[in-house]
Image 1 (cartoon, rainbow, N blue to C red):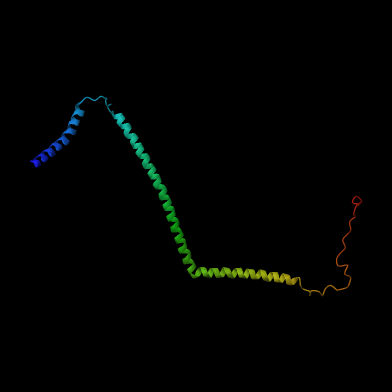
Image 2: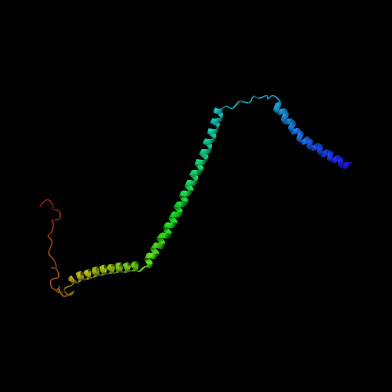
Length: 162
């Protein structure tokens, strides 16, 4: 008997759970509404849809702009990295070849020969001024006072008598 009452209570609870929401729906659906709901016209619907479309397009445009900036920076960085790697590879390949070393040797030889010519020219110039032995041209003890030409003396104090 106790089992029968438990089953009966369960069935009653299920019926109450199903019938109460249905009864509320029927009462609200068929009772007159205190607030009048405005009718939506096609113009109102179209303007609402266009406003929504404008907002969505604005958000999509901002997302595309962000992705474009991010993509530009990524492409620039990757392009710079690739260019640097390629330049290093090409320069190492050029320097490893015999052409670069031969060119460096020839340039070094040209610079050395030019500097050697300058040194020889300056040595020739220095030897041109040392044609007589040092100390043998001026007799010592003879007329030490008359080495050069005498300069004319200026009048001191009488500048207006010129």
